[in-house]
Length: 165
Image (cartoon, rainbow, N blue to C red; front, side):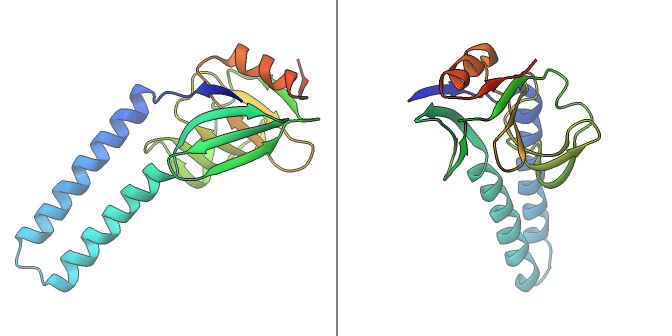
């Protein structure tokens, strides 16, 4: 199985750090006031759960083997069939994406997005620098961003994907 990294960009890192700091400050302010515990404790729990879920579902790395792409997350994985899939590098793929459902920069770009050029697309990326678009034989387009897109595409073609121009 071949492994490909997807490192966190500075933008994603700073969005994550800033959000964590703001959540901690919000919890501290609510807990320090004379607000009833019925407000502060559930709010702290909901904010902490949102932080944990966003981090747990963020992509960690990509793995290829047996004709499949496995998107490893902090918790869990997603599998994509590569045999017969159309793949190509798309440096402009992240331009104009609008989040429909998912995470738009807090530890990752992950979920369902829309753009006029690509239509609906699933995104699983930690940065927006090296877009690689995959159209599986069945299912929705998938946009990933490996650190080494050329090696990623070469490995995908070796697993049965078809290179598109």
